[in-house]
Amino acid sequence: MEGYKQEFIDFMVESNVLKFGEFTLKSGRKSPFFMNAGAYVTGSQLMRLGEYYAKAIHDNYGLDFDVLFGPAYKGIPLCVTACIAFSKLYGKEIRYCSNRKEVKDHGDTGILLGSKLKDGDRVVIIEDVTTSGKSIEETFPILKAQGEVEIVGLMVSLNRMEVGLGGKISALDEIYEKYGFRANAIVTMEEVVGYLYNRPCHGEILINDTLKAAIDEYYKEYGVR
Image (cartoon, rainbow, N blue to C red; front, side):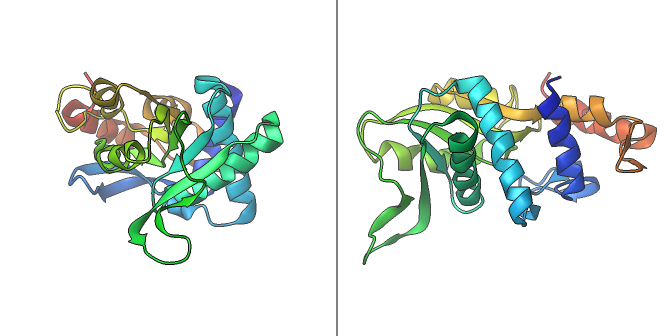
């Protein structure tokens, strides 16, 4: 596993973003782990987060794209900080774009924030996490309504490695089958478990034998087979 991935796992724990216990997800699933990107709140955290995203996007999609699109609301700071990181790490000027939840009819009108999209733009979507792939159902038509844009891919911070809405393949694979672009993550839950299992992280064993068993049971029901 790449060094920045190990650093990112430590970073998620340190920032209180990745938690273990008992959680009810938006999908209704009862999960032994939970990730909340809204817990990145300080300047240094956001700076580091943007750099991890930029490195993962660069590894998976290179530099041949024009726009980072972050769906409202959590995607807005993600795409902004990742654009800054691209400029810093790779000297590449990427435009940021996000959507509003409601269309604005005065001043800076329309549904978009940041850069407008134009024909020929190559876009990478950036999100915190995708459990079922439902959010892309809302994002995809917004992007396609802006013109002849090409969606290069989707980058999330954590691949939960769960079946999508169809119940057979992963949410990220479902996105590829339905929309034709690849979805990737900075780290997968398999990498997280492998790295943290019975290993001290910030002075604590986060995934012991009991929690590992709970995670294994969760994946028997919801994991990708």
